[in-house]
Amino acid sequence: MGSEARAEKNRKRVVERYRERVSGWPKGSFDAAVEAQGGRCAICEQVKKLCADHDHTNGRPRAAICQGCNARVGFEESSPLRAKVQEYIATWKVNHGQNANLG
Image: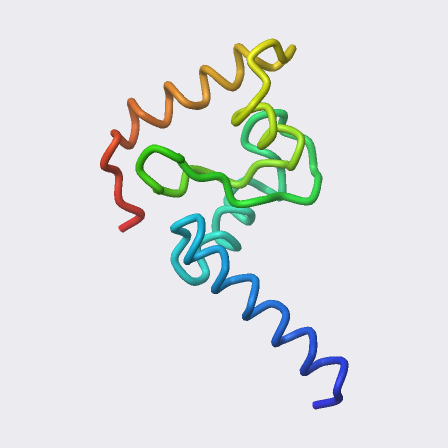
């Protein structure tokens, strides 16, 4: 394995550890979520670079969303996507509950 391949493998490992520590996403679960979502943001449904969304109140992972929607979920109440963000959070809570576990 060349040095570039090793560096990329190490970068992916570091990102996965960070995701698990900070956002509560168990190893491999983010990639599985992205695949299950067809590479699309769970809110705006566009194919973009996705990030690991998590509930800040309980630390549980929710879904893979784009950076723009992630900012809206956390900060932007007046967003034109506000209704979809509210629907997303409400659906998550109904389907998974506050104490949902990724299993």
